Image 1 (tube, helix red, strand yellow):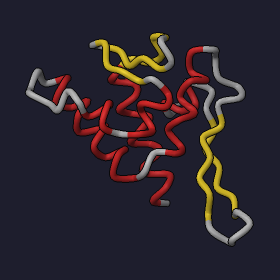
Image 2 (image 1 turned 45 degrees about the horizontal axis):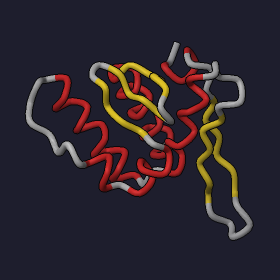
Image 3 (image 1 turned 90 degrees about the vertical axis):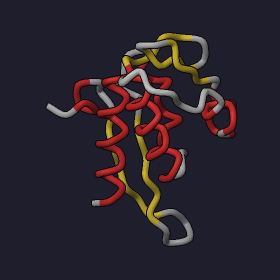
Length: 113
């Protein structure tokens, strides 16, 4: 079972009004705290990659840019933060960093498919 299936999240592709592919992370069937993960589908690809790398640095107790979350507009809008070993969204403990890293990698793979 994939991480997004385990969390009751669904990935969809659809065409928007301009004929562009839109990638959607549907959290409607997720538990309350996991509904907060809906912000992932608006993150630019590069930010997702940077977030995965930042989580890896934190997990390995290596220095990381502590202002990374503050410097990315999407993160400030949804009030996301690291409280090791968890990732918080909107003031709520939402997901363990290991699980978030797996979910982000699945999302990247989905976008690349």
